[in-house]
Image 1 (cartoon, protein in one colour):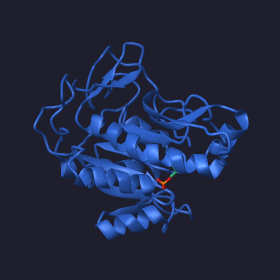
Image 2 (cartoon, rainbow, N blue to C red):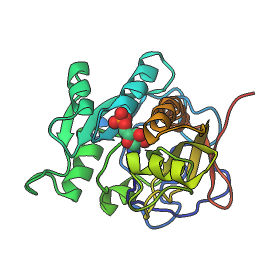
Image 3 (cartoon, rainbow, N blue to C red):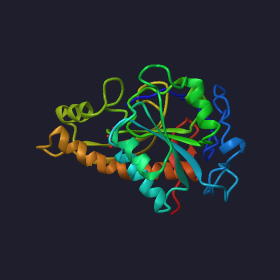
Image 4 (tube, helix red, strand yellow):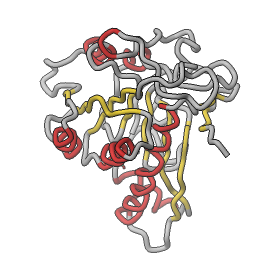
Length: 263
Ligand code: GRF
């Protein structure tokens, strides 16, 4: 699926969630931290990405469907694998699996955009996330609506999306849900997989942060492939979010992000 956002290049190899804030010159710096405080995500592994020893990063997860990626992320949070917490779940739907799960977990939920157009404006959404909710990073986990450019400008290099194919192939307008897997099977490609990327102005075109590959088997249906790709989504999304929360994202000079791993 696609979303809107900034795609600016940043300074060479600045690590950490705040490295890109304002770097592209087009985005207002984020005011992070709940209720007016300035929050530094927890313990960046290296670089300039935070103050170290900070509080867990606050995440807003946007969903439109079953919410299995949200569950995987929440599970990783509970196991202590992500230096963050899911502070809010947003959805364009008042009811869906992801929203139901959030309620079960006691995570606040909000609707955006409202079906009748009467709900939060884009500016109101930014205000909610940066103000009361104190959200540091946004994760689009099967969210089917475009997010407004205002949100992208408020969170430069702070929004991740999961896509169920190996971008830049099989992405862009019209490539969502089952259509992606059908197109992969029909193409004869031998590999598909899951991609986590930063959100950019175009559908599925923002900088790729992490990928996991899956083999396409000779008799795979789109459903077979979707199920195996989804398993990899559940691994790669928490890994990428964990890296973002702990300041382990390094930006190459040409604007390509990598996850720094201790070895
Ligand atoms: C996933 O395949 C995701 O990549 C796509 O939508 C699906 C959402 O699944 N964008 P879930 O709602 O997380 O179960």
